[in-house]
Image (cartoon, rainbow, N blue to C red):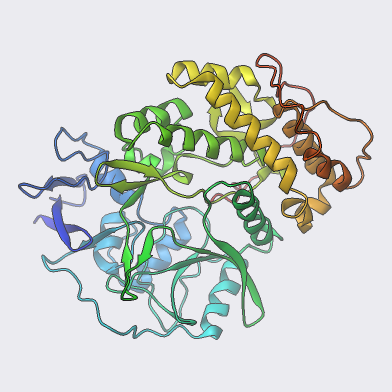
Length: 456
């Protein structure tokens, strides 16, 4: 017997997912007259690929098998398949989409009813730090679903009070604790986003929050907004992997050129493509090798899409035991340390971008990184305990910025004095388009760990 999931964007019913049996992939049909894309991979005015509807649903649930199993147990779902979890959860989902088994949308009450006690928040943080999913046996069932591989949970914060979200109560914040085998990850991610903001890059608001003595990275959701009356509303967004119709498992196969092509077709204007170049350059500059297609998000507007604030900025370069291959390559380069001006030129030409504009963005990102890294990323415990890796980030940024290298820096400590010289040396802004950001310097070769890197 067929089963259905009704899709909503805000208060508008836009279409229906159908699954005729557990063995079949989900299909999707828009309502007659609908003029809103549920996803760019599900165009209302064009054909849908067979995999796109199922891949879209898969992109709304956690990737971690343990988190899926906990979600199944607590929601009494039939299985850990995305269809069954989403049908049972009545969940607050990423972006502006709601899915319901009924043709009616969940009512939104005037008051939040599921108060989140600080002790319970602390307990969830503790569970994730120990390697759990954060969806354990708590009094409040998990009425939210967060995509990604790392343990996290959602909260609704209103006038200083915390509540558990559900389909009728949009979440406002995401809490992402660092596991005990990744000490300092919460601090370094918050510092990286602070760095981006100081550099003038649109970035998600974040901080290291404390609940009953337990610390965790917490970020304010950019896919939520507050009305003049104080109500929280969901904003329609989707990550690049979803927009292209890829499954979460395929997030590493999407390249920069394909992403730019998507933005060329659907972006509100050409500036969106250069906003992406800026975010891509920032991730490469800080050594965020794990920035993949699910770490870049599109925000749907009436006349196209814009790019969301940057998020999930973890400098994997400061975690040398993990894979350093780029999640999204530039040109033919697989490692951040090898990305040179020629690779940006190659990407620009293949993507029909203005070469000089792209090189100017890359140079500016690296100059601003050198201006602001001292008071942000370089102050973190992770940077202080990995001085060689931090040193290599600085050297690479100097080359990419077109600045001459200096050798008056000891490799046994973070070279704060040299970092601060970036402001004084801005007079040397000429970028050698064939050599700047070259391949000098190298990272120590490390074996890939048996467990995956802390992917967001």
